[in-house]
Amino acid sequence: MAEANSNPLERFPARLRAQRQRGNLGLRELAQRAQVTPAMISMIERGKIHPSIDTLFAIARALNISLSELFAEPVISPHDYVVQHVADRGYGVTRDGRMRYEDTGLVLDGIKPQEMGPVLVRVHRHSFSSQKVSLRGDQLIYGMSGSFNYACGDEIFTVNPGDSVFFHSHEEHGPIAVNSEHAEYLVCYTDELYGWLDMRLDPRGLFARPPRAPQHLSPIQRLAWRIRYARSQRGFLQTTMRSKTGLSYGMISHIESGRSKPSLTTLELIARALNVPVAYFFDEEVSTCRASFIPVGERVLKARVEGGHRYRGAPLVVPDLGEPMFFPECREYDRKGFVPQTTQAPGQIFVMVMQGAIDFTHGADTHRLNTGDTIYGVSHIAHGVSAVLSDTATVLYFTSNLTQLLKRVFDELRRRVR
Image 1: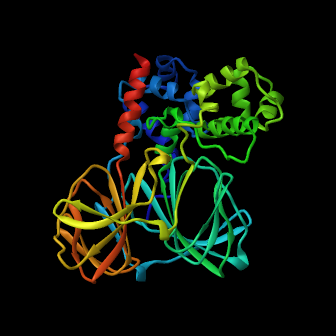
Image 2: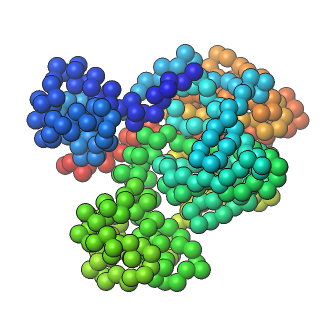
């Protein structure tokens, strides 16, 4: 089973302490080198506070190591992939506030570090209570059975089997109603570490393009909405904005609710605090969508070629959302004329068979996957569909390369230091 302390941010304090002790440094000596207080180093090592990016970089330099060494973790799982068959799957009951649901992870003894987190969730109308959360990174919701309503910020989507929603999870999101007696959906999210770094440094450049504000709002309300959205995307509280802008808590609250019209000088203060251009609050021409909803009836499968074999594929995220942290795709394979072919690439893969049966090869091993079965693995080892056993087979095929995202984060840090 996965370690109880499986969150990389929770493992960071122990990794920092180990690096400090490896260098034979005391708290005071490390603090002096990093130009912070010994109390701050102590609190970081005890997990009481999360350091800022500037502090992280200073600590790494003081330890004479790269920042990536404080985060990057080797694959330590007993295998480079994990197969889960439907017959071996068990659901546990989870209570989150007033909401009760059942869920099961699809990478129980998984790869570490794990870039994507696929989970199946079951909700029941008789025990349902809406619950919304705000996280970091990207997330996909894919309807498996039944019907339910899912909220992303102020947008609400009715999700039926085969429908998908892809979104940036810093906006409050969650199921808000179950329309059938029972409903089941697949959730796939990115690891919190990558989401946190993405939020702080924006290596994907998403902050440069403002979000598409709800059109039913008045111009001043759209301005207020975008300020709230940018603050949420940065992970700032209103108290943080007060300290960064010098504005009073009451003024920030009134501006964000649309009750006050900020002057251009005030807008410049807010834009500087959020590290966005002032045009971010007004530009309607280059705005991005905030959630990518694709009903199954509107999914368009197009012929594609990977290596030597052909399939029909449709992405489960639209380009208007910006660069995704992982790429979800629905694929359809035909047995007739199928040519097996393996591929290798950086990152990780997740495959779930939705209909039919296939053989999937990973390295020297081949596994029979039937409807509902899954495989999760590292993708630098040769892998791919090696046989289609039914007339057609439909699979969800997700790929990630968050190591590349980390590289871009650290490149940006080095650029800022110069």
